[in-house]
Image (tube, rainbow, N blue to C red):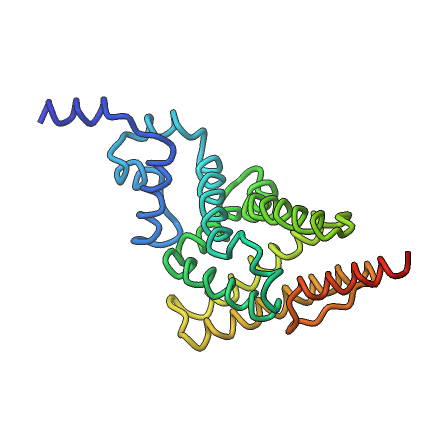
Length: 232
């Protein structure tokens, strides 16, 4: 037993290992984990956990960053939105996103509740829930806009708005039951796609671009560029 304890004490445990342990605890026990439960799952003591994370808020931020990266990857980072009709592309992307969320629904619930559980810095923690995803989305949107070309002013606001909408309606989708039915998930995917397209369409219209949700964006932008070239 002494050898086992010594091995456990000397084992290197990273921040990623602790986030993995936290996600397992939340998946299993629900969205209100204790730091003791997380330390036990990671096979370390609480003091060792706190050497990696300053407090629960620090751990919350790391979990939020992990989940936003996974959600963004599930949604796709390629040029799908450009090459396919936006409505079809968005529904495909949100279908992938929904499948990813359903693998860890309690983790999303935890991220939604954690700001309330914290006694300080709640506003900052709440912002962390979507900040990383919005930053990644803005980077992708800016690269696409610059390639078109398209005025990129307001891209950060559009990205934050899109992520805010998705976070809010994901909470609504998960609030009806522990495990949403296929019908509830399909409704979520359709609503998420339509609301997101509404924001994107509004952004484009402010720049004088009228796009069709059932026509590939590549075609729309090609026509716009052709018209602008003819005007010059």
